[in-house]
Length: 514
Image (cartoon, rainbow, N blue to C red; front, side, top):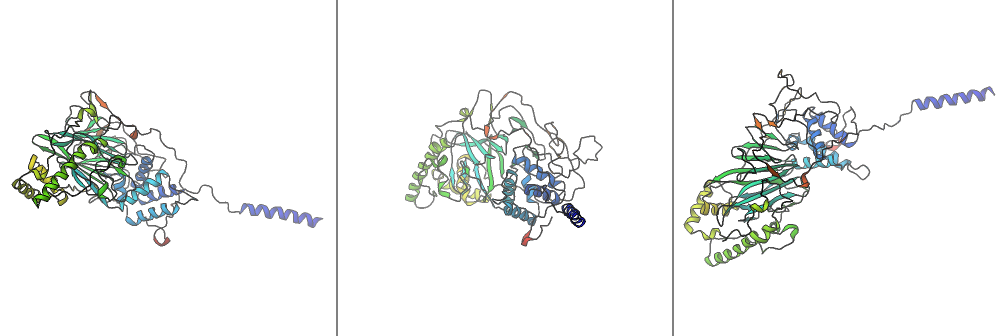
């Protein structure tokens, strides 16, 4: 009996000992998103923290946090300066973990992957310049002598949109007088003519005029505006770029427009600049391909007189289609417009469907006019696919040649030196060191959790170097389409990252380098 009791107690003791030494799997394993956030912070404790918070804010339609470093960059631009191997490791990690068993295609990882892919992608350009002449993303070229407000380009995710206002200069010629855009949720307008209120600046943000004085202006949702010579450069937080070249001809202010997007983008594009599908022949179809234009051909107005005459007739037929059916299909409405309007005006105020009275072409210029214009265009470095438009503008309007602008990138020459502490860099203040005795509130050092703490905000709407938001001198009727209304709620963080850095595999399965 004693032996039985002894074995009974020994069994209980052994079971108790086994339970105490049992390895129980942790239920607090960091998620893929948590690992990515920690990896970004490990790359750069200050910039990486801001980058992770910014992409998280962008993915939930929130304003991004204030910059805590000196560089005046967008999230895409900062990410592009991360070492290539590091970006490749992040890309591979996201793709490898996006499985049916453990999907990672949430808004944050989807956006981050798109940004990373953009850093490896070639860019393509579309143009609207002069009278205006348009070059699509697929390099189709045509003249668009019309008057009104039009959809120049729009992405399917509705975070990228550009509209152009074309104003008559005579019975047959028009120029871009204003541009409006949606920059990832921020509505920006540039008015060379007919600004909605009397101010010294052509720039408006969400209906209020803003002024630049020598430095970059930070848009709330991550984009930037900077001035380079006569070029206003608007950069989306995802990397797309709009260059506005402010020009004057015969006392009239007008704008030449250059749009840069990514060739490998998964977005679908629509508008006057085409669909960016690498097919030159469908760029002149109407919205949703609901109408078929005359057969496209590269019009030639030089050479055999008989062929030249046939080409002129075909070209004028095409111009008629573009200024009527095609133009009406891409006109904006009071519901879709991004422009600001003074009291008593709307998009109809700037529309004239009877324009132009006569369709003119390069062939209507005499041989001497054509030759002189061509020589000047060539001397100014105009590229061949814009030569026809340049000759037209020279011959009829004496507009100086305007080659495709190539201002320096914001990342050019930037070296990301290690920061010992955060620096406050906002539209309100100069770049300040936290130990500066100025008394200005500064951001706290970054926390261990990338989502727990954000740099301090300011509600003063001014820009460094006296860049200020000016109060309009008269009421402005503001049109804000529903597509860019942004929620005001702040997302909560339910996944608390581990204090241990994740191992994101690099090439050949080895850990990635920081």
